[in-house]
Length: 189
Image 1 (cartoon, one colour):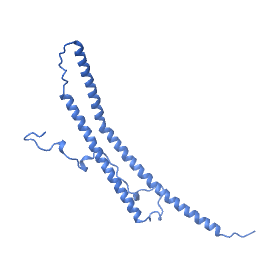
Image 2 (cartoon, rainbow, N blue to C red):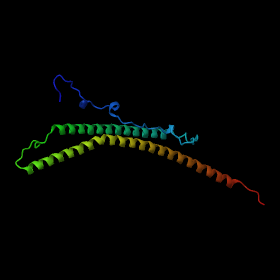
Image 3 (cartoon, rainbow, N blue to C red):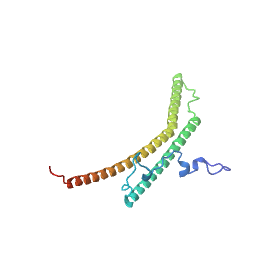
Image 4 (spheres, one colour):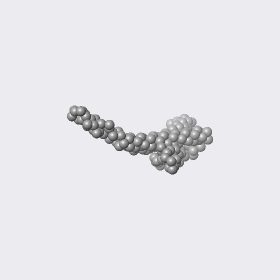
């Protein structure tokens, strides 16, 4: 609500921007060229992959980075919405006194019923408020787990690609050894 003499922009009306909306830590995507297996250096033939496959990997990395950024924005906006919903419910609960709080009913049974209803309402409000207040923290934990999982998955993909390459090289070397051993003539005794 805007009151005359008050600024027209409030916290509720500010639209999130990528720099202000993402309060979560984001693990950046690592490029394939910056990662290698520990203790293993890639062979020269491994680094001589075609430019089209590198372009395809770059496009895939860019898409993955875009999805990750989109995920961060979505999680941030959901977290903010849940937080505001919790604040709204909290304010509403304090403002809304039950109509029967000052009930001067006709019988003692009615008064006890209204007291129990009031107690039940307070318990439910407390439960809902506690649940809603935990949601942003749990969302942040999930996002952190998602970022770690994404990082580990990228490491596994890179390791598998390198293992595939080294296996192909080993197979070629073994075929060369077999050809050489078959072409050698040993003297007869």
